[in-house]
Length: 192
Image (cartoon, helix red, strand yellow):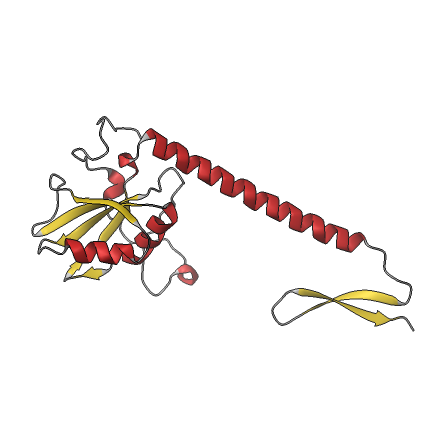
C-alpha cells in the first residue's frame, strides 16, 4: 500500500484517511435510502482486507467480549490493542485479523455503528497491515472467483441458446408464459 514504510505488519500504526468515519451522503435519492442513513462508499478488492480496525471500544477491559463478538462472523487469527493509535478519551482501538476475507466483510457490515458496552463502534478495513503475499493471495482469489462466475454464466447462456435452437414438433407450438415469480416457463399448446 502507498505510504506503508514499516517492515512489520504489527508495528506502530499511522492514521489514514480511510480510517475516518464519513458523513451521511446528502445527495442520495429518497428511493435508495434505507431505514438508517448511511455514508455511501465503494470498496475495491484492494481496499478490502482481512484486517479490521475497531475504534470506539470502551476502555473498561472488554477485549474478550469484543473477540467473542467478532468470532460470530468467522475465525479470528490474531488481535491486539493499538495503544499508539490516536483515540477518543476512554476508548481503545483494536486490530483484528480474520482468517477469510468474507468473514471480515460480514463483521464490518454487522458491527459498524453498533452499540457495544455504551460505546458506538466504528469498524474499517486496514489493508496497510497486509503483507505483499497477503495482497497477492487476495487478488488471486478474486481473479479465480471472477473467472468461475463468468464461466458459469457462459455455460448457462449456452444451455439456453441450445434449448431455443431445438426444433419444435409439428404437433405443438411452444409459447412462453410469465409466472408470478417472473421466471419464464415453457408451455405447449396443440395446433388446431
